[in-house]
Length: 248
Image (cartoon, rainbow, N blue to C red; front, side, top):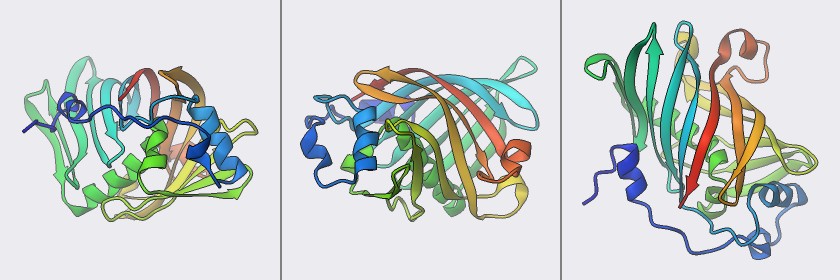
């Protein structure tokens, strides 16, 4: 039995997909939905079951700190984000993950001294919301997961997907060519210690790149209180650039 508790282990657990993207994938879908997928996936591309990402950026932990990370996201609703964050040059290593329907995080200074651990139903539900949002990096998952995909208007598509008890829909804003511009949802969490509940959450996409037939957002700003003035002032906590993406 394979150990899926690490990003490498989880990546090793997924087999390569066999179906390919084409007109039949978009049958009877609204125009805005078709535009999004036609922009995101080249015709003939294998519909991937997972993506492995390498990234760098900054995370706000009482101040902006640099990080490098590897992340694996699977369309079946699992994820491992393993990162090294540096505070005054000292590495803090750990992971956030959602495996077997359970969310967990574990962080240690120098990879040895525990600084943060958490699990339980609140962590799981928050992680499920995160995975649904980050499936933007694995657009084939929206076509394979049983999600209901609809169009609010020509510039907004909505993904309804129930994942580990979280039913919050994800709305993607697209431009006239189908390029994703922003994402918003109600995500379970406890931003700024204001108490667990459904809070406005979202991201702005500032650039994109194509990897292996998939065009995905490559530079994002992510945070709580999305759609309000609090996002820029205190809600934004994650700025990321995708350096590499491999699909399987």
